[in-house]
Image 1 (cartoon, rainbow, N blue to C red):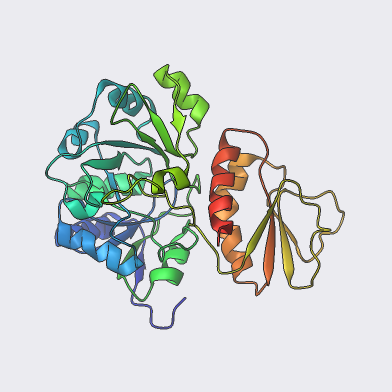
Image 2 (tube, rainbow, N blue to C red):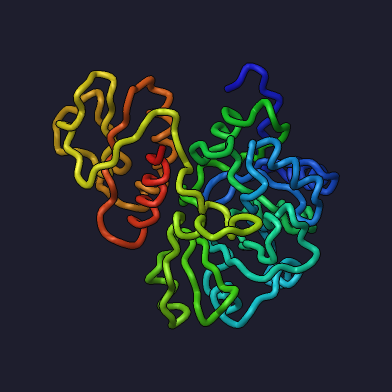
Length: 333
């Protein structure tokens, strides 16, 4: 925790939620829990308040924010929803799915990086939903961490990273999913695109919509010149620890050549005794558990004074794609 921390962590009591809602209405920023990762929220219709998010994180103006809504009726306040978007919203909201749609004029340019579209979702975390209802306005919120660093999945992570830049953190416990939301581009419902994989998988989306999606890679997106990125989480380098990462299809521990290198496996190894340099994400290799613990474990290893971290990629599709997406960006230098 930074010695100069000005941030206070609040329990989700009715009194605290009412106070934090007033702070948001007054143009302040508040770190909030979601089922994916912790976010740094501001009134989505207040350009000056949203500007405070960029300043606190050191986030470039070209990287847009996700607007979070409380109710399906709020979607029309921020975006123009077509039939495909309405279908996916009914199926997956509240939940970890973000839709990119043409934006309503009420959404300021700072939120959308100057583009005519906006990213929007309805979160499932009960405390965040109560705060949204009390605030009475959609809230724009990226992850609550210094820009480019490992995403926070606890209130303590937020305080460690932004404790000297913000004042209010709502504690909702450890994030249930642990990876940022799936993002899909539905501006053209006939040509849906997957911009960022997440807990709602590509196969699940295609089955729900009855249509194939095009998967957009970050490098392809960034090659297109525009006023800003189409959606958050599109940079090729992101979620990155200070310690260099080396990725492996399979990892047994022999790849480590020095005492100051660590191994991070998906599943617990079969060794009777765990070597000091070997860590894992889930005892049985369950990908939901691995995803939930990924960022917290990377933070712990980043604080372990290792010179390098060797990381095993997840196998299979679905959630493995989301885990590997985060690891590949974290390893990019």
